[in-house]
Amino acid sequence: DQQVKQNSPSLSVQEGRISILNCDYTNSMFDYFLWYKKYPAEGPTFLISISSIKDKNEDGRFTVFLNKSAKHLSLHIVPSQPGDSAVYFCAAGTYKYIFGTGTRLKVLA
Amino acid sequence: EPEVTQTPSHQVTQMGQEVILRCVPISNHLYFYWYRQILGQKVEFLVSFYNNEISEKSEIFDDQFSVERPDGSNFTLKIRSTKLEDSAMYFCASMLDRAYEQYFGPGTRLTVT
Image (cartoon, rainbow over all chains, first blue to last red; front, side, top):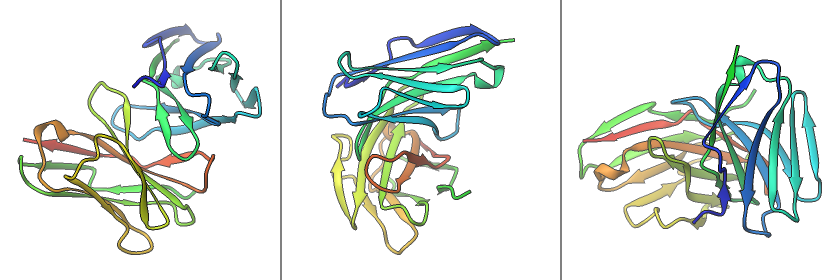
């Protein structure tokens, strides 16, 4: 069951540059999408969300883009900071969310 | 800021024993969830709870698992007879309403020996 996929298990980015994390989904019924950040041995922390009626949502350094026709969303972090180093999960659904496998982001100082 | 809390932070138990993991969701939230994450793997949905009943459960959530909201604040996950493969981080989450973000607790690390 791979309804939500994050095909890049890891990503390294230089401090100050843009980090782009990608997520693909298969179920066109999903109408709400979220990004979470997770540190080891901690619970996921909500970052930003987007509903299916929008194609972009911005919150400070974080922007989420949704392409419904391609069933693809992405998280942009600009500028990237060393403190952003963590595992990022996308999740999709409505009242129940399916999580992707995560992308480990490493921001290099 | 309101947060989801979970106790204990770490539970060690022997195979075949019963464990109860406890959660206090955010007080005005209506939807409650349990997820688990086996080390190195993805966060997996276990069960959702709404209006005092299970609204959905995954294949993982078999007869060994049960959930309860015994009062207005606590939300528990019980595993009746633990197996080695139940060792994981268990996360509780709550959500205000449909199509809102879920807020996660810090997790309980369950180790079954």
